[in-house]
Amino acid sequence: MNGRMMNDRRKDLIQKFAALAGLLVLVTVFSMTSDAFFSVGNGMTIALQVTSIAYLGIAATCVIITGGIDLSVGSVLALAGVVAALAVKAGAPVPLGMGLGILVGAFCGLLNGLCVTRLKLPPFIATLGMMMVARGVALQITGARAVSGLGESFGELGNGAMFRIVRIGEDGFPDVVFPGIPYPVVLMVVIAIAVAIMLSRTTLGRHIYAVGSNAEAARLSGVNVAGVTLFTYVLSGTLAGLTGCVLMSRLVTAQPNEGVMYELDAIASAVIGGTSLIGGVGTISGTAIGAFVIGILRNGLNMNGVSAFTQQIIIGLVILLTVWIDQIRNRR
Image (tube, rainbow, N blue to C red; front, side, top):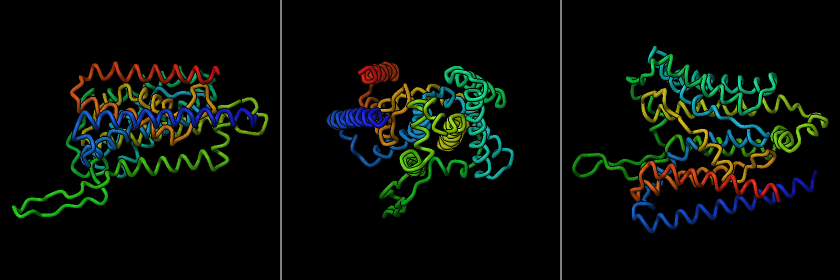
């Protein structure tokens, strides 16, 4: 077991360094093709774009380490976001409305986990079903229409920033000296650090890796395999709910069609960062690198005028290449 763990860690480090090298290549190429790439404003734009991928990618990492998968996060974030918006529109305070949205996400994750652990459904099927149910409920309760008129306070979480510096110019108009660190970015850092510590420094984290490495051996060692698996799906749903609240806050409008294909970005960020699809291997730092690879790739292609359709082709090829490399690595 120790030999396999050392081998897994070595493979994870190799994949992580490869992802970091790819990230540096992208930064170098796009900085040469666009003068605005290294501007502060563009840096904040990239960070904001990466946050949604990172939230979901962190959750996907934990689920995949146990040998599972969650395809429902895109639909769950849409449902959580519209529930939060409808609650606020009905008169609830914004924190309460968003808390309700996060709870809806956690509940969806709980149902996923129960389907996998109690009903013994394959994770692919269980979460695929939840993907359809959550999207259908989101469309049903909104009449397939956006929820608007939510007020400025609803947009504070998604559009506010820490340490923002504004001064009044000679013409009397405000001049932004430093745009500040967006709240979603602060949340991303806090969540990444918290989950990384949980995985690397706690008994629960060791049990998550043990379940993914060999569920039967973990069970015989006294690990509550069902409980650990259930926890990862609840965490995934909770972070999907948070992602939905943050996205809808950025738009100051709740869109029931939001989050389509986000689950693929989440899985891709985890795999690019070294998380193995067969379970037992993965780190949050690697997933963060993977999320920035996807975010910078999209941003750089946008700045160079590449069409959205071509971007889908390129990112799809990156995902295929990454999974292929993962399969070769596991066979070796």
